[in-house]
Amino acid sequence: MALLMNDTDMKQMLESIRPEGETYQGEAWGTLMSGTAEMLAL
Image 1 (cartoon, rainbow, N blue to C red):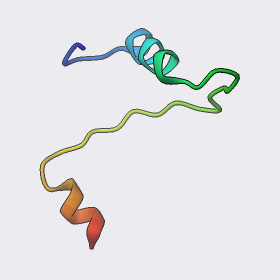
Image 2 (cartoon, rainbow, N blue to C red; image 1 turned 180 degrees about the horizontal axis):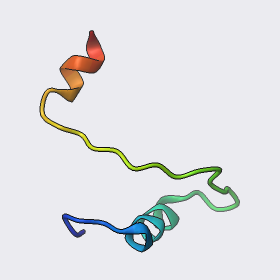
Image 3 (cartoon, helix red, strand yellow; image 1 turned 45 degrees about the vertical axis):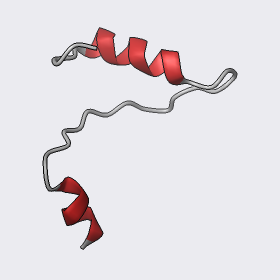
């Protein structure tokens, strides 16, 4: 998978993991950085 993604890349990736018969209601971009898990645990 590419390090940089555009909308087309994101839609292709989401379609490949979407369970059969289900649809997405929305899409969102996000960035995970080092320390994210520790911050979420607080």
